[in-house]
Image (cartoon, rainbow, N blue to C red; front, side, top):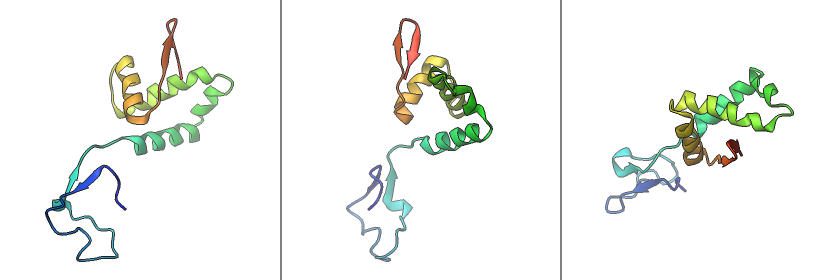
Length: 104
């Protein structure tokens, strides 16, 4: 019914008791557990595709890392290593290191 990252204080009234058919969340009865930036990542990915940046990847799948780093650093400016950690934690995009190269 509600996203798993929204917890409702069960000791108070049901959040839908007043409006049983609505999907309104009463904010003083909800608690935010965590946030993720997947929406902005998807929007920026679509934007890079519409601008033609994805053509840089044609025939070179290893260049996906470059595009992922550019998008990630727009969302969360950090070092390359921190950006790779952020990609994994926020978007479940994993790169493994092999002989000084990174592979998805």
